[in-house]
Structure formats: C-alpha cells, structure tokens
Image 1 (cartoon, rainbow, N blue to C red):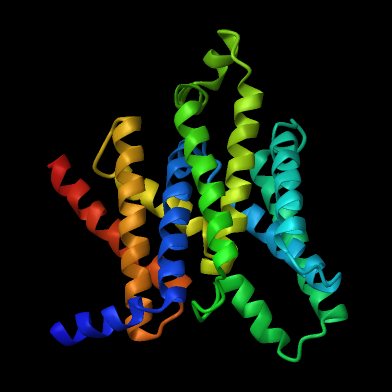
Image 2: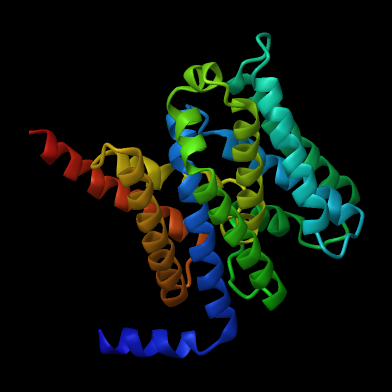
Length: 281
C-alpha cells in the first residue's frame, strides 16, 4: 500500500497530472448538477446527442485547421442545443426522435469529413481518441485548465442562481407556465449549460462516454435519496469522488482515463442500487 501511495505522489509532482485532476473534478461536478434535471425530465440522451454534435464540430475544425477548436466547437454545440430543444417541442418530431436525428447525422458527417480531408497519418487513432477520450492525460494545457475553471464557475453560479426556477421546470413545467414563468427560457438555459459541459468533457472522457457522467451519478443518488436537493448534493459528491478515483486508478494502472471514470461510476451505481434495495425492505 505504501508503494502505491509513493508512486501516486511521484505522479502528482507532474503538472499535467494535477491539470487532469482539476479538470476532471470540475467537469464531474458540473455534469452531475444538471444530470438530475435531465433524468427527471426524461431528456437524458440530450448529452449523447450533443456529444456527437461536438464530434462533428471537431472534425470541421480539424479540416479548416482551426488552431483553437473551442472557438468553433462551443458555438456549434450551443446552437444545436437550442435547435434540439425547439425541434423536440415540435408535435411532428418528438424529443427522442430529434436527438437521434441530430446525433446520428452529426456523427456520420464528422467521420465522413475526417476521412475525406484528414491530414493525419493515424485517422483511426484520432477517431478513437475523440470518441472514447484520450488514452493519455498529457493533452491538457494550462490555458485549457483555466478555461475549464472559468466556465465551470459560470455553470455552478447559474445553477445556484436559477435553482428554484430549474426545480419548478423540472417537476411541473405546465404549472410553472401557468404561474407566468417563462419555462422555455429556463429550458434554454439548461440546454446551453449542458452544451458547455459536453465541450469541456470531450478531451477527458470522449464524446461517447459523456452521457455516463450525466446519468450515472443522478441515478445512483435517486436509489437512496428522495428530495431534489438531497439527490443533487449526493449526485455532485458521488460524481466528484468517482472522477477522482477513476483518474487516480488510470494514472497507476495506465488505463484510459474516460473509460476508467465511467467504470467507477458504474461500480458506484451498483453499490447504491444494493443500498436502495436494503432500504426498501
């Protein structure tokens, strides 16, 4: 055990390891806050759909040789989040169908562009890294860490500031509209925040694994707690712990960061599921 801690302290002396830990904790915290709302509104897969949009945007940025991908990926993902919300409210195209349509379309276009115009000699490696997260934690720069920190603070601040409104829209949107609340505006805020979180998480866990950060902590907390506030706090705490645990295991075992974090979230869900079963007896 002492040897493991000794190895861990050696790795923590490197800045890129500390960068990954900071970014991972911030992303886990932000994604878990709105994960509860998305699960309760039965809109969990918006994260999956927008992550595929982000993949397509990254492919476009690569083709155009954009030096800072965030400048292109973030606006495109936010715009698609708005379109997804508007399309999902259309009586002719329901929410799940709209998500599937945008998700599959963006994924296909992104991969097509990468095949047609890619200048990389390792296309399959680039695609795999984008979809499942980087196999290394060497990719994060100090500028990316600061950007993630600023955007994460904004996300948390917006959630806290609009907490009561988000609570109302989550549980009874019809009643919220009847009381004069602009429910559409708060749904829009939720969609935009989720888009920002997804773009931040792309480098760490990859586009195909982002939904796990949103869904698993919320579902785990719901197995034990019943109130919205308790579920949100538990979800955030659990998400941060699993992110830290997953990244530390990844550093020590040399496993992919994103997949290891998701595995930790799955293990936590199994534990909370058993706790929930025991509490119902």
